[in-house]
Amino acid sequence: MRRARQSRGEAQSQGGATRPPPGGRFRPLDDGSLRSIIEAAFDILARIGVAADAPEMRKLAIAGGAVERPDGRLTFPRALVEDMIAKSRKRVELPGFDPQRGIEVGGGHVHIGTGGAAVQVLDADTGNFRDSTLADLYGLMRIVDACDSIHYALRPVVARDMADPLTLDLNTAFAAMKATSKPIGTSFFEPAHVAPVVEMLDAALGPTPFAAQPFCFASVCHVVPPLTLATEACGVMRECVRLGMPLQICSAGQAGATSPASLAGALAQGLAESLAGLVLVNMMQPGFPCILAFMPFISDLRTGAMTGGSGEAAVASAAAAQLLLHLGLPSTVSAGITDAKVADAQAGYEKGYTVALSAQAGADMINLSVGMLGSIMAASKEALVIDNDMCGAILRSVRGVEAFEGAIDLDLIEEVVTGPGHYLGTGQTLKLMTTEYLYPRLGDRQSISNWLTSGAKTVWDRARTRVAEIEASPAPDHLPADIEAAIRARLPIKLEV
Image (tube, rainbow, N blue to C red; front, side):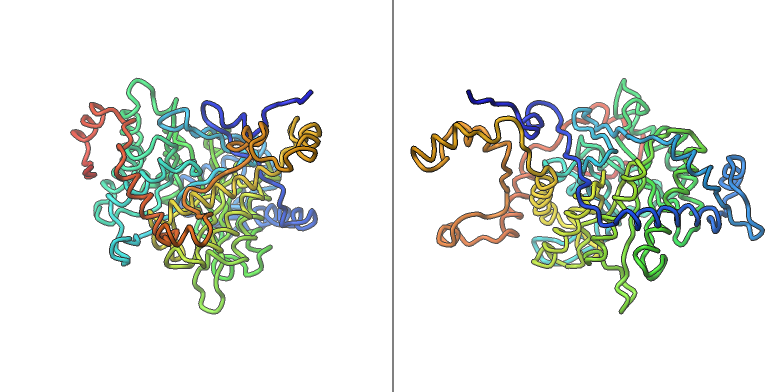
């Protein structure tokens, strides 16, 4: 008798939200290197510590057990850091505006997302780069809403047509919220802007308080490498804790510039900076939802410029994911930051191996992974849908080979080899077509002759068509019209859609 049980892929495909597969099979650091980097991070915090100008942060840290050096730097004894790691949240729920589209961050389950603060977009109609606008931000987020391999939407571009900082912060959060019902992320110019944005998000949910469904997280660069707390950002961090907005706190040293040139040294400093932020958050409120965005950027040492598409960037981000997974902490890394200016072969190979290595290493969230060009200086809708195809294949590779019950069916094999000689049309083949296999939306698998006959369209051509299809479809309508109208009447919302 043939036994047929659903594979994990089948179970994920039926009803409700799916849970991405766990990574962690790729381990760029051997056990000795892993231990030495973690030990060095603890030593950095205990011996060198961080510079901190903000009086409130200093007071909080010292009251919580930090030690002030004669030169004013704050150091953190190892026992204190370990205690705060033990108290920290190991799984962070990020609900969407639609709760069914939420994600759980932690444990190495890989999620793909946008991110960055690009200041330009590549205009597909003209082929030129131009300043990014609020409309571009909304348009990119709307594309994310329709991409099944992108799980969350952190602001990828800055709306450069918004001059006033508060108006910019309000409109950034509003545009993201209106464009997608997936979890969103935003950032803030200053601490005073957190409260009005949270009030807007709270109003948008109607009877459900934002604190009960915090569908927006704050991306906060709490540290300026090397090892200096960012005063304004730490104030934002404190306001987010007070108001219940989940945090993604970021260390983004650049090896050879703001962190050591050796990858091991850059990882040790970056891990120390990440843990310093985690300590402060848990001093504010033990167990507050906080994800460590550990982003070891790389310099091209010939010029000093950042390179996001290098092999060094790929392995450093994967190592960052491995370190945080080993410590049991929710992680974000950066990948997909191609140095290419258009969606060409260079963009493809740089995005492919950087995102794949981080995913295989078990990064819980991969920021900047889709839609970015030119070392995160620009974004593109067309690149976004191309990258969605790529990320689907990468997530399938993370799933691996599943020897589920019934996968190896000797009865079937005997029937085929003594019968038709092929498995096309068998019950197992038909059943597994949509669960064991993933099919690209944009990638072309035709024969050369059929491809030529059908117009010889490139992936860029097909991406432009896909973007047009999304933009021609009904816009997301999860934000009720009456609530939107009330928000617009009360706040300076500039988005016109």
